[in-house]
Image 1: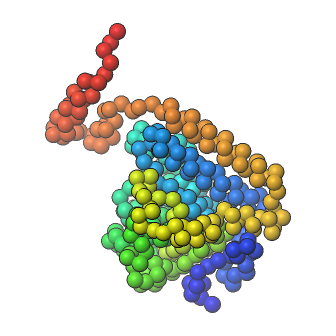
Image 2: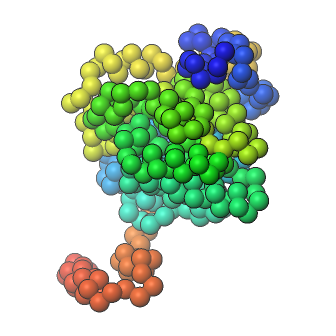
Image 3: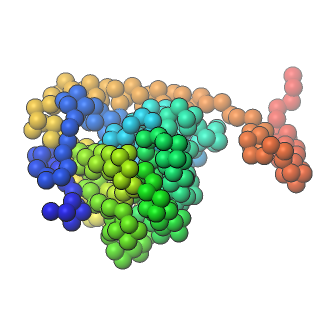
Length: 358
């Protein structure tokens, strides 16, 4: 059977592990438990960030609830020196990479321009423009290939991004150049308020063949299947086989961002059906079947998640306001006169609200 003929699934709804002719899981017991901890911690941080935004501590937040398995499973299959190019919703990927979630929230609070050291984590800045980062990933991958490295690039984007010309250009350039890159599309069914049916008339994964690379559709709520499919694609890229397009079919349980009202474009029945396929519940059932679950383990993970969320809240609430000059400092080496004049007007406006010296 061709591995791309049907959606790859390794976990049944009841948590039983299914046999697959191509994709296998090679994780030991500690790694399997670690996946669960990461799933729970990321969801807890995500909920905390949403609460912080609602309380005025963040300007906006892009939740990843429901997509944790797709993000954590795929990121786990990468080496620490493989370079990741995210969009703006990859909290789970960032967590696996060791990026402090506070550094991500600095962006959404307006306290930082980039948040973290991209080279330390091999994790690029969040990309707010839709679909630009796959091109960056391809460029990096070709550079790594020319340098004789065996590193792989991974580009994360949503189903809506596949309607952008930049993404098609990235697919084509990567395939022609046999670039060591994996395109990881999280198909969460909704690009803000536009459904998948308005984005493409064909399954996303089938675009791979049109550009000359393998395409695979995987159950994005199955953390083990995502890991296995991503590991296979990364190995292929590392061995000189070129790019792969992965479509992880999942569902965005939350809003597109905290400024969005999803009740205006999707039904409560659809949402409830998606919640029945929750990736964390499903993986918990697997651990129970595998004898890797206990109430003590559950309590330990919950306590860890609460402790991390409390630290995040405390830190975010006390982030310092960056100097106004940072708006210009990292944009131009020599700012143009027009920008200097604009900044001077902003500075004069701000000065009206500065407290009088005592």
